[in-house]
Every structure is written in structure tokens, then in C-alpha cells.
Image (tube, rainbow, N blue to C red; front, top):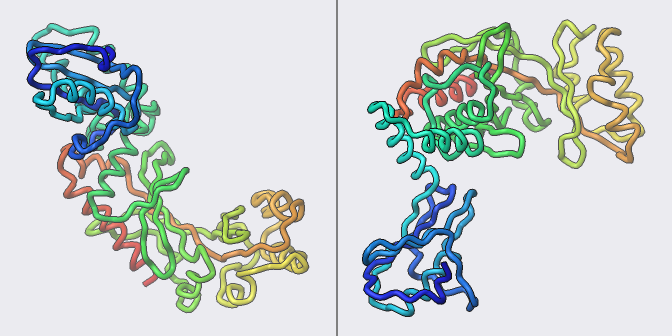
Length: 367
């Protein structure tokens, strides 16, 4: 429908409806917008006329802000009929699907299923899982269920739990992290893992990931790296710590090397090595660095291959790198534990408190 050419008489109310993926789109400023230029045509996506009411709906599949476009469509109607009452509405796809799910449930109880409703919901679950409300872990399947819907459901629920905990979330292209303002670490990253046929949500932290962080570690005893468990609130969970060398150039990550005591002839992570070997290595001293590495690793552990040393340094134009003698620590929380503490969709109290418990437990890891 072209709102520039439509003629309305007897219309008293106009609903301007934004239907996007953004459940939180605010429409409070809608009537303060100004028409964005003059168009020969303003075509609506959906036009519904019921008695003295008209519904103008602009539809988007994404979170795109369509308010200006929607205003341009209704402005000719307002101009032609200044007395018409306009009500802007955000009725997003998440809103719509919640209504459809309630309808589907009621029809299912009556034994009167609608293939149109059920098929549409199934399609949306596959294509747009972010439109659906999160379910508690109690209702989410284990990690063997590896569809886009289940993956998104687990990620979304964990994100909401962390948000409800009050912890700051750091968003990257390839990961979500919990910010931690420790002198020796800056972030905790959760992962969904299966180990020996058991599902876990693990929480990894990298102590001493920069040389600046290392001072808080190497100026104190390193006994903590032998801890095999960590207490979170009143419960004990498995803990693993390994060695992590991180290589950077211009303060940007290049590559890394992870290993354990079994790979070593003698320790790399000592206070002396931290002060003498971590930090900046100019190209003239790379042979010295290689001799240092060769003297510490067993012959069967090819540190050059595992870190792609040749590819990242000798075969490039780089003239230096920096290396940190850090650690990789992983806390293993059984997936079933989250299913036990997260049972109600709208109640985040216990799982959010547990996230805070993890952060606090890590806070005292070096003690």
C-alpha cells in the first residue's frame, strides 16, 4: 500500500508497528521524528484496515532500526488527517513468537494442532534461534545435541546468567569473556567441552598473560600451580594448570605454545627466566631464544612446529617479538551442575551467584 495516495475517511486511530528482531527497540521518540525527504511512494510491508483503525507494519528480519522508515510511511496519513490518534508500537519477532507458542500450546491441549503454526515455529527455531526466549539449563540438552538451535540456546542462557551476576562481559569476534581486574589476569572465558564422555562448562583464565601481569606471579611462590581442585562457594571442582607462552608483535597476539611438565627437561617458568627471558626479543637474538627453548624441551616435543615458529617469525618481515611466561588454568564444572542450579527461566539468583563464586574463587587462586 502506498500511503502517499491512499485516501482515508472515518479513521480515528493509527497503529505504527515496528516488527524487527529487536525486542528492546524504544518507540518513545517516534512522534518526534521528522519526515526524511519527500518520496513519490511510501510502500508499507503490511497494511491492515479494521473499521476505524489502521495498522501500518514495517517488517525486518534483523535488529535494524526501522523507525524512520516507518515514520515516513505514516507521515502522509497524519498530514492528511491531523486529528488521527497515532500509537507507535514495537511488536518484535520475539514478541510474536511468544504469542504463537502460547497459541500452539493451547491448541495442543485441545488436540487441535495447526500445521501452519507448528511449521512456522520450527522454521524460526532453525533460522532465527535468537528470537526465542532463553531456557534454563535444566531444559537444555547435553552437548551431544549440536544443532544451531541448541548451541545458541546454551550460549544465550550462559550470557544472560553472567549478565545477571553483574560481572562485565567482554565481547570479541571469536569469544565471550568475563572481565576480571586482577593484577595477574584480565579475563575468564567459558567453554562448553566434553571430556571422557562427560559434558562440562569450563572457565579458563590465563595468569601472567603479559609481562606486566607476571610480576604479581613471579614475586611470590608458585605453589598454586599444583592445585588440582578449587572450591567455589561450598563445592569442590577439578582444576588444571599448564604452561602458556604467548608471542606478540606490536602488542597483538601472534601465536602461543601450551605444554606441561611431562614435555620439559627443566622448568621454563622460573623467576630467573621471567626476568631474563620474557619480554622483547630482537631478531638478532632469536638464535639465543631458540637455544633456550631447545635446552628446556624434550626431543619429542617439537615446540617449533606446535607454535608455527618458522611461519610466524623467520619467514616474515618481523624484526622482533615479545613473549610472556604465563599459565593456562581451567576450572571444570560439570554441565549437570548448571542443570541442577538453573531450573526456572526467570530466576537467575542461584546460577548468577555461582558465577560470582567462580570469579571470587579465582581471585584467591594464587594464595
